[in-house]
Amino acid sequence: MNVIQPLRSLYLRLFLVAALCGVVLFASVGCKDDGANGGSGPSGYPYKIVTTVAMIADITRQVAGDKAEVVSLMGEGVDPHIYQPTLSDVQQIDGADVVFYNGLMLEGKMGDTFVKFARDKPVVAVTDQLDVKDYVMEDEEEHHDPHVWMDVAGWMKAVDVIAKTLAEYDPDNAEHYQANAKAYNARLAELHAYAKSAIGSIPEKQRVLVTAHDAFGYFGRAYGLKVMGIQGISTESEAGLRRVESLVDYLVENNISAVFVESSVADKNVRSLVEGAAAKGHTVKIGGELFSDAMGKAGTYEGTYIGMIDHNVTTVTKALGGTAPEGGFRETEKKQP
Image (cartoon, rainbow, N blue to C red; front, side):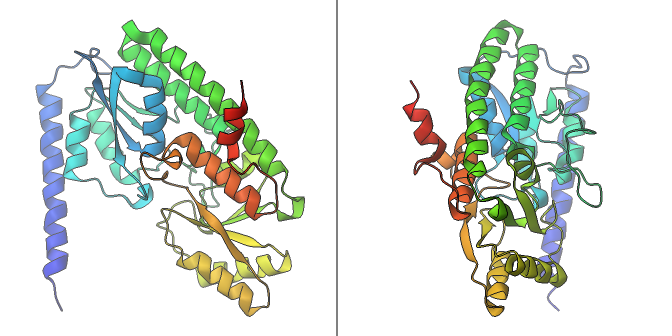
């Protein structure tokens, strides 16, 4: 048995843990304690904001404007459920003035890191304003569903959290952050309305969204879709043969015409649904690739939060028999005066 690779992996993890402890120890001992929120405001502009997923980075840029440089630790195609923080991530967080993360256990492997660095700087979960009891969805095992960005109205609350945090950190520019958040949320309200209208055009019996994992619960609740995932809320859960078989039966019995793959999750399980349905004489197509735990490529329209949701809404609408403009929400937004 070749034990070299496992040992290398073990040594690397031990090295990263030791490095993390060293950085945290330095931060907690060598930095000034400025109160519960940490920090004393920016020493210059642009100051540095670090976020975990790109969805948070994008809305943070909209609020911060030119006052801050925003860095995302997880880029295109990265699955945050299984992401292992690196030494570089720790250094980025250590050098940040403000840190935003999602919360609700999306970044489970980074939880301790956030707690430790919150001693000397604002480290904030953007889902803080959500009522966990009444708003936040749970799976059958009562795990909180972290995919709040799939409901645009819910993600608008994250914009408010960011604006409030930055206004408190940099009170001299509080009006700047609040004005940016208000303008951006107005666009998000229009996107939310577009999603409701487009998905509402899908024939009622076809409003079923089958994907690789349960990332679209908020999306379905907000816009009127029955959502079914092969895996659970986290991609760490295993896709059982029984689950695949039951979904194949559902597709056949309900004459569902399309299923969807995800950009950050392997497509083999979804393709097994297509093959299983075909074996039973029912044709199911891949309706398109959706963005779930990560946005599109940086620098593209789909690499923005609005573009991500627009793409998902428009792709699902067309694949399931609804009507949507060829250019989606972007086309309708351009036509507005």
